[in-house]
Image 1 (cartoon, each protein chain N blue to C red):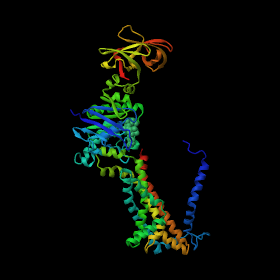
Image 2 (cartoon, rainbow over the protein chains, first blue to last red):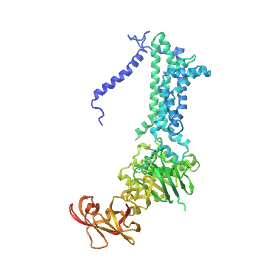
Image 3 (spheres, helix red, strand yellow):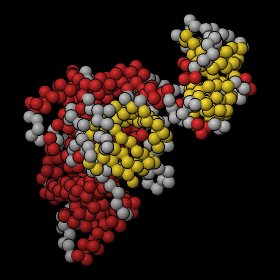
Image 4 (cartoon, each protein chain N blue to C red):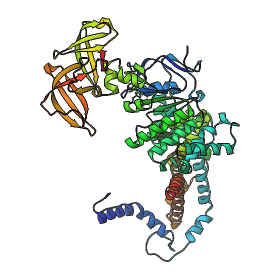
Length: 266
Length: 363
Ligand SMILES: Nc1ncnc2c1ncn2[C@@H]1O[C@H](COP(=O)(O)OP(=O)(O)OP(=O)(O)O)[C@@H](O)[C@H]1O
Ligand SMILES: [Mg+2]
């Protein structure tokens, strides 16, 4: 099949898009190795000192730890709510199902600030002390809808015939779920975990309102940036990007890996 | 006497739909029988089968199986296995794992050792000629191989009943023929009860002990392939089972077991009947294309019709002639062996048909 007529043109366009998307990131990464006090030209020589500075900067390191902690907690919390909700929406009929579905999806369209304010007044009312855990709770509930949409879509696409086949062969509901349904949801669940983690990682609005004494990475960067923009920021950002790329590669390999292995054998 | 499987007054409609998908089906199936539900798309075959399997609950009616009421029991508690039209293989498991699925379940625990399971999977894979494919994934198989995997997966658990929902619909013609033979062979070999759903009358005729013809959620006729072919009880069945010539006529007299029927062309036909009340009524007259021939052969046993050859189609071993009867009495298609009688378009020809080959149908 000849997909595209004009190869140089297509390649040129694709290149332009990639450049548009990634040039700023490359520039930033480039300056993180610049042996100069300021972000910008001229390039005064290669150095890793900004990275050393980052590692020595206790506030930054603690904020990275906090972000990872909140991210992982958010991923787990939203999965624990979102996964059963998606299954209930797709596989079971219950009174008020349509309303439930809309309500679950609502946080997608609500601005983060609104969610944050609502949660804040809620926590104050019931006397919660603000901490990383309240951020986690806030993000976890707000991001549940991503699990619901992703897993629900996969379930719809999957249909019921595999599950019916399992019941028909004598499997119980639990066996069917673990042997047939869940394996088919694995890549959707894993992909959503990555999405939720990365959203949580750079979330500011909800975090800003719900945080206690500790700061997450975006908040820490923000407060540093308000004082001065050192190449140290470039170094942290480059680290975060490298980390994200690793996560994405893991995600792709984990969800496609089996197919790739199978395809290479046949 | 209760049969092996009894459907009694099954009705099922979906959602708020006022039209029932299955509208009062009564059906008894004997042990070891190969029964086919035959009917056009949307007539309720799948719904009936899904009620038997337990995936749908009928709105009213009862399903008995081995004397037990199973109408509302779980699918997993019924000793029946289904072969789905879309195969429904588990894509995350190898072919062997798919086939072994039913044996590895909790309810089978202790029944087979791991070594026995492996041996049994081998056995059933070779039964469906997939011995070398056990390690492959479902997406690496062809349609026919997937279908055979589904068959092995169903049979390996040794069910009492196997249900088939148009299992061959997605296969090409040659493969379909081969799989028909294979399924028939498995039925003979295992002597289990097979309930088969198809909309392909040839498939139904070739495979079944009994054909149950359905229309609009109801059973219209149930009988052996020979019966529904040669003694259809309605125009619908006559047309559905095979292309048939159906003319309309008025019954002039009924004399014992013979009716004299006058067609619009003025010709009269004698036909067997056991219903004296049709005298004076308008009826359908069915003549199969292979039971009528060109020319008259002298014996006055036969019914003779006359008409003009309107079309002639070469079909290989035979020719099909379409004869236009006089006075708009209708058209009759005739199959003649290529070596037999000949005629050309425009010829006026006689046709003869034995009274016993005519079937009177309520109009
Ligand atoms: N899940 C469903 N929801 C609503 N209506 C349905 C559903 N399944 C079937 N129907 C309707 O019920 C009727 C019977 O459907 P069924 O699937 O039993 O037909 P079928 O004889 O198997 O047809 P086909 O040969 O096309 O498979 C159809 O009119 C169909 O539209
Ligand atoms: Mg169907």
